[in-house]
Amino acid sequence: MTASPLTIGNLTAGYRRHPVLRGLTLPPLVPGTVTALVGPNGAGKSTLLKVLAGLLPATGSVALGDLDLLHAPLAARARRVTFMPQTLPQRVGLSVLEGVISALRASPLEAPGGEPAERLALATLERVGIRELALTPLDHLSGGERQLASLAQAVVRRPTLLLLDEPTSALDLRHQVTVMRLVEDLAAEGRIVVVVLHDLNLAVRWAGRVVVLNHGTPDADGSPLATITPDVLARVYGVQARLEAASNGRPQVVVDGLIELAGAPRS
Image 1 (spheres, rainbow, N blue to C red):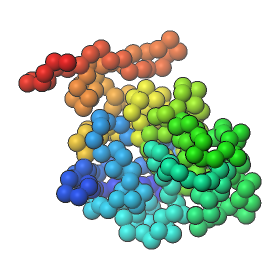
Image 2 (cartoon, helix red, strand yellow):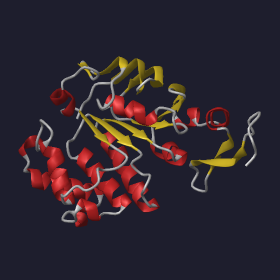
Image 3 (cartoon, helix red, strand yellow):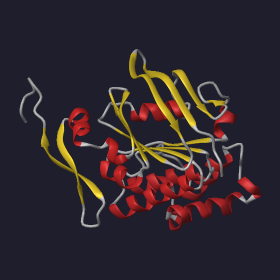
């Protein structure tokens, strides 16, 4: 698979009259890389994903190669972009397998390569690690299982741009590793993967690029070691923190305490 870079320029978006993103511009996001969006609550991470997915209007420019994502027809966008929300809709009367098949059939590229939809859906469930849940109703799943089913619905369409909003938030440690390993593999196949993460250690371990958002603009952008630094963590999160090598040699974020803000009450 080959994909064109994603370019974002002077992007402004929000809700009603409340702007969240303010003239956001990023260097191109390139295929083959997992880009993690991190930052405090309200920084604009999910808002940015929704704009890229076409779920929220915006001004500025967003282009995937020669495709203008801010003005592209739904069918043109659906051929190249998929979005995994934080949670699936409630009260959906489908099994896990039926949900994945429905997601595939909603795409203009139904069953890529002529592969039967059910076979492709089952292979996707196998890849995500939930094939044994294929016949389970979506309404009977735990929160973590629903997240994995949602990921399968996004992955089955084989997008060139994959947008994931907190895909590990309800998962246990084993499934967090399973999902992030899959995310890494999907990027290695030539996709652009943009993932919102709250766990900075997951970003350090799995992302090739980290964009730290704060108040709707990028505060830092680059490799994990260049962006998740004590200065950035203090400025953006208000914590005293550092990167320290774990026993396996990989860096991890260690938080030592809060930075007291002038005029803020102690808790």
